[in-house]
Image (cartoon, rainbow, N blue to C red; front, side):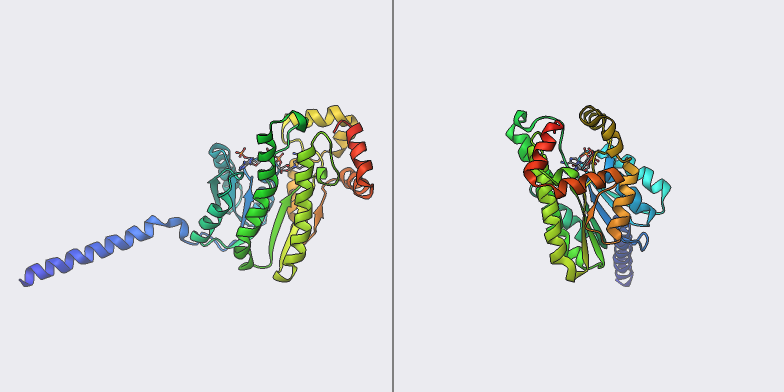
Length: 292
Ligand SMILES: NC(=O)c1ccc[n+]([C@@H]2O[C@H](COP(=O)([O-])OP(=O)(O)OC[C@H]3O[C@@H](n4cnc5c(N)ncnc54)[C@H](OP(=O)(O)O)[C@@H]3O)[C@@H](O)[C@H]2O)c1
C-alpha cells in the first residue's frame, strides 16, 4: 500500500517535472532575448523597407518584418542577425487582406512585444497608365497603399502607447504632393497617406507618439523604376534618385528626431518644395507634360 502510494507520488512528480520542461521549451521565443525595443516593418524584406530595417538594426532595435514571400524574409533575417546583435521575427502575410492588421496585432499581444515603432512601407505603383489597369488592380493598390497603413496604425496604437515615446513612419511618395494623371490612383493613395499622417500626428501629440511621413522621389529598387525614371526625366531623373540605403538611414534618423515630412535628397527636396507650392492644376499639367 505504502509502496503503491510512493509509486503514485513518484509518477505525479515525474509528470509535473516533464510538464514544466515542456512549458519552458515550448515557448522559447517568449523568453526575453535582449532588452531592445521592437520595430515592426510592414514590407520589410526588400527595397526601402529593408533599408529602414537595417538603419533600425544599427540603432539596436529588434525587428518584426512582414512580407508575402518567406524566402526573402528568411534572407533578410539571416543577414540582419549576422551583422547586428538583434533579434528578427518574420511574418508571412499579405497586407492587402482585410484581417491582416488584426492578425498581426494579436500575434504581437500574444508575444508581449514591446513595440516602439511601426513602419508602414509596403506599397504598389507600377509604371502603367491607370486607365489600362483592371479595377481589381486599382482596388489592390488602394487596400495596400492606404487601407493597410490605416488599419495597422489603428490596431497597433494601444501597443505603441505602452512604449512611449513611440513612432509611426508611413511611407508615401513625392507622388503624393500633386495629382499625376498617368499614376492617378497611385498618387491619390499616396496623397491620402500624407494627409492621414498629418492628422494622426496632431491627434497623437499628447500621447507622445510621433508620426512621420517619408516622401521619396525615385529610388532604384527595381530595374523598371530606373528605366522609367531615366526615360521620362533623363539626366534630372538620375539627380533626383537617392540610393536605397541612404533613404533608409535618412528616414530613420529623421523619424527619431520627430520630423513630419521627410524627403531624402537635395534635388528631391527642391522639386517637392516647388510642386507643393504650385497650384494643384499646374502641378497636374507639369506632371502630364513630363509623361507622368
Ligand atoms: N522605389 C521608389 O522609387 C519609390 C518612390 C517613392 C515611394 N516609394 C514607396 O516606397 C515603398 C517601398 O517601395 P520599394 O520600391 O522599396 O518596394 P519593393 O522593393 O517592391 O519592396 C516592397 C516590400 O513590401 C512587400 N510587399 C509588397 N506587397 C505586399 C503585400 N501585399 N503584403 C505584404 N507585403 C508586401 C514586399 O515583399 P513581398 O513582395 O514578398 O510581399 C517588399 O518587402 C512603397 O510604398 C512605394 O510606393 C517607392
